[in-house]
Structure formats: structure tokens, C-alpha cells
Length: 89
Image: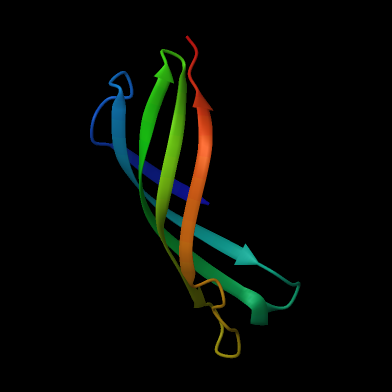
């Protein structure tokens, strides 16, 4: 998986939106029929609850492309993530 995350406002602010783009290579089985390239694009926001803890909401799209002619891209859909993130120095 390769991921690039760009913050639109620094995380030191009370609200910090961001965008993320990811690409993953999925090898489901030992044969080449189930290999897929998964592309994801998400947007989210950190809501600072304290100076070192944030509540994170993120959502986006996932698209799969089969890497062989007989494979299926079955990872298409929506993504939603709710998490807590901690910062330390």
C-alpha cells in the first residue's frame, strides 16, 4: 500500500481537514486470477479533543481493477472510518 495524505489546515488547529489517496496491490490467492489493484480516495477531518488527542472522521471511495482478464475487481464501494488519533512529542 502506498498512501499520500495532505492536510488542508495544520493538526495544531481545533479542526484539521485532510485528503488522502491510496493505491494497494491485493494478492487474494496464489494464482494470478485474484490479483487486483485497489485505488482509494478519501477526505476527512480531525477534531481536536485535547492538545494530544483527536477524533477523526474519514470517508471516500474505493475502486478495484483486476490485473488479469479472468479476475474480478470486487472491492468497489464506499469507505467510512471513525477513529481516535493521539499525538506525542
